[in-house]
Image (tube, rainbow, N blue to C red; front, side, top):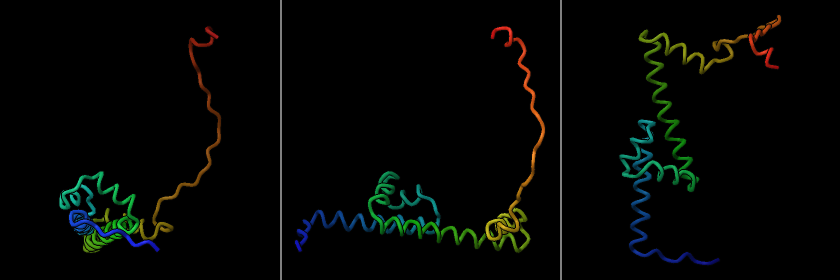
Length: 126
């Protein structure tokens, strides 16, 4: 098995800076679920973040976990607001999300009949 060549000092620093930027990005994403804000905090461009996600499976999984944590926190706040009487709409959304089989509106029906379309003036041209 071939040994990896040692990184130069400059390359090692770039890798270390990149790892720190990724961690800053994930920390902000975890509490905000906002990619633009996470990029600003990490001092990287959006394209860089998305490129990292596409190229680095571990980073992509950490990104997904951070989004899930942010969504969990948001759901916890929504749950509190819904159950303490501050928002019936939030309660409805939470019920639909957690019990769709029971609370999501369903439409089942049949339509029968005929449709007549009348185009005036066009028949003479045909």
